[in-house]
Image (tube, rainbow, N blue to C red; front, side):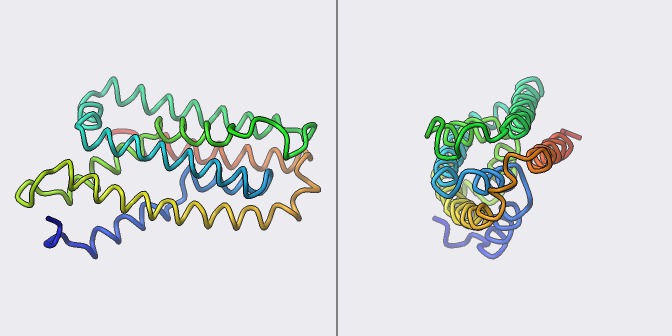
Length: 205
């Protein structure tokens, strides 16, 4: 079914999108540096599940409906932006009064899941990038989208796992400063910068 696909072009597009700095990358690095690998990998699981939900929506045509409706798309886009602002506020508010190991174990998972279900960049990726490589002449479009999207999920999982490991490695030297105003402000500013990037790049022309 996908024998005639332009694989070099698809793989290049997939990795360029995945390696472009975005909300998942910045948040995972910050979370893993503050809380460690276990929290980071829980967040990766949530992110992956959220992306899988976007993929299923694209395969069943729900994403196409959202993409064609300016009101629905903008609602999703601004909900995602608002959630990123909330994450920045949480990063600033974390003054170290609770030990890194405490707190709700599923907090990172839930945030990763919600952020990616509300992520307009994922919606655009599955419609524009994955969709343009699917061809009805090669068979069922929804199967093609599922297969190509699954490859993207594997690439995203690999990239996000690497970010968690790198962030956790930096966590030890950062731990002494994690409760300082400078550290908390730095994480919050990074998240707000990523939020601004999402707002600009996901806006329809």
